[in-house]
Length: 176
Image 1 (cartoon, rainbow, N blue to C red):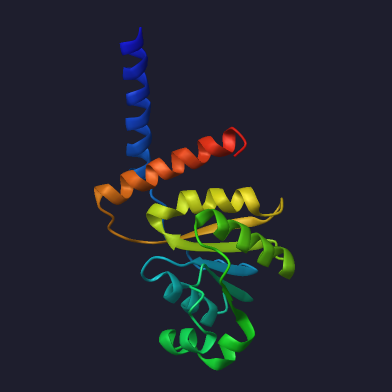
Image 2: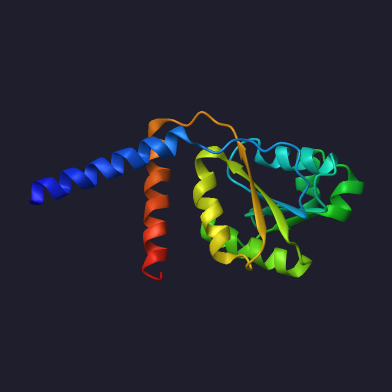
């Protein structure tokens, strides 16, 4: 009985992992939203958000999880953001330190601006957990569009992220 239960649990875990990997989110096409939120921590995320802002795909962009040592002028210079765009439309969030606090920081920004739709930009392997955290934090009725930055993650990254996602879902299920 115990062996069968463990075998069934292992099979469910394995099928879940295969689906997690096979169905990694993809980049989003041209869809206008009220705001864009970019989670720091991976290559090409910020550039993707800036490109969309220059194309007029949203009113404002939040870069969530910016290091406290980064100053606005350093960010603008490093990413070569035109002043007209940076001054009006780019917010640097420096309160978040992890994916969960990215969700909280984003929720405060969305509430402050009264947005009803949001484009979430993060790496493909990170998108599901990031989306889950936003779903936990955002006001009801906010539409989230997932815009994944493609990557080539190794098995270690995928396994780690899959386990983080499962643990976070379980924690939420029990009220943590």
